[in-house]
Image (cartoon, rainbow, N blue to C red; front, side, top):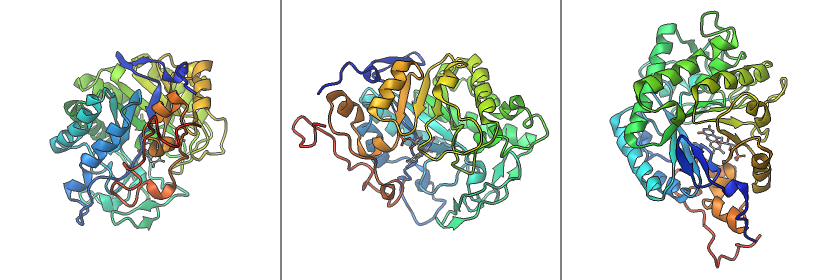
Length: 384
Ligand SMILES: Cc1cc2nc3c(=O)[nH]c(=O)nc-3n(C[C@H](O)[C@H](O)[C@H](O)COP(=O)(O)O)c2cc1C
């Protein structure tokens, strides 16, 4: 049965661009850059044709957000995940962007600094990992550059001077993203990566202007946003940011997260940003420390577009949009196995179950990545 009256399929505007529907491809690291033996070969960090095909296959979504992309060597820590640090990266990303634009897609690049979730073996220039404070992540393992599991290291607490330099790394990445033709960027402030490490009290015990009060803990995020706007890379309405106030990923979760993240949303509201992307569902691992933040809580303090995420189905997403809690809905695992998710929703076609974990990262290559079938009028599996 056709579902053309779904709000999920209605148009929406972000950053002055019309999205053809409210279905968002969630950012997903898939580690599909070429794999050469030498770990620091630039080839391992360049987007390639396979990745361009992957995004092109999903270009019917209203908005595509790329996988997390490292803004610097020190921000990196995932073998075969892409970087955006040089013109060579921008040129390689341009192929991806062009392929998506040719299909009338809109694509934002997710900017990523892993902070303490990286392993120092990924950083030959500095041989260290960094964070807001010298607190190692608890309850997780990290991967060495040789893909072996390792205990998280005690990070070096960035000095103020190093924080300013890291802000410039974000600016450099944003300028390169512009050069590649991206429509906008998403700052990865979720899942226990560097910006989140500054935001949350569990990982930030600084006593300077970057720690203590929420205002201080969000200073790093604010400085990144302001510096990118000032650089001319993107205006505010093409810069989105993603938060995970309820998540446990990366050893996160702080008792004051409700206060922290509602305050952050309220303050960031002043910038007129592209969107606030909140992982408010609990189905990707949730902490058990205090009150969870839901889309509706953010709606009270943030006037701009809100994207919701985690464990959404067509029905839940439709209900969230109709209730006014959010404006658009991001799908991750379902989008791995259903490259034509909007068409399936629109036509009432069968939605394949979430892709199994074994296909997420390894082996690299097309298996489990670009080989998921699309539905057509005469597909056997078209009717639900
Ligand atoms: C394979 C995989 C890779 C992911 N990589 C990223 C990432 O690079 N950046 C990010 O913000 N979230 C990442 N996530 C989280 C997803 O964006 C999303 O929040 C999560 O899958 C929950 O949404 P879902 O229930 O629709 O799958 C990843 C998730 C998966 C399954």
